[in-house]
Length: 221
Image (tube, rainbow, N blue to C red; front, side, top):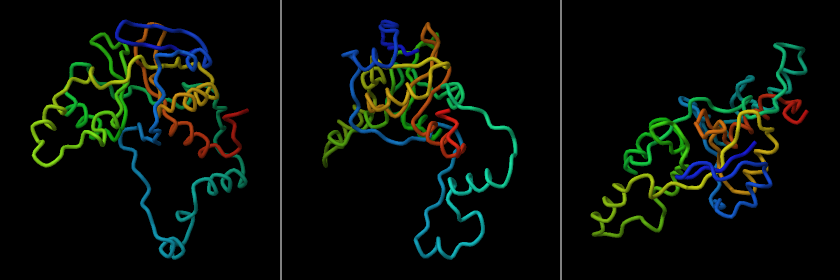
């Protein structure tokens, strides 16, 4: 099940097609693959020569290693991944609509995320904050425009957040979520209950990681 939430509360409840048809949900033209889990580290980059010189299983791509481990014999029983709850990040980083943009930026940078649900004091979803909207290229200051840059950094999150914003329930089929990602261009969706209380976040990276970690693609089973 999908929802759309804004400052006035829930404005839509329906399936993926309903979200796609909902005119107030803006399509984002700058999709990114984003990390949402605290402490997740990026793999180091190596040149072609360095990669060829490295020996052992550690140098092999993760998908190949996963297939080799599967071929070697059964290990722990694999779960069939079908729903948002199977791959979502629980306890997602959230920000307040009244927080300053600069403070929100620092919070997101500390946790290594590039988007965060915006919630009120009761934990109800109001919008989604994308780092790309916090410092768009056309607002970078020209020489002598420092005061303007400071004013932009002091804006409240409510002036920058994406709202209304789609959300998804934990029991939603992952294929439906992938459809909404494609239709909206969003990098991720807040996970909420019917009342709009935010319980987590699911990103496109979460789905891709599930595909890599489960080579027989039980995700689509």
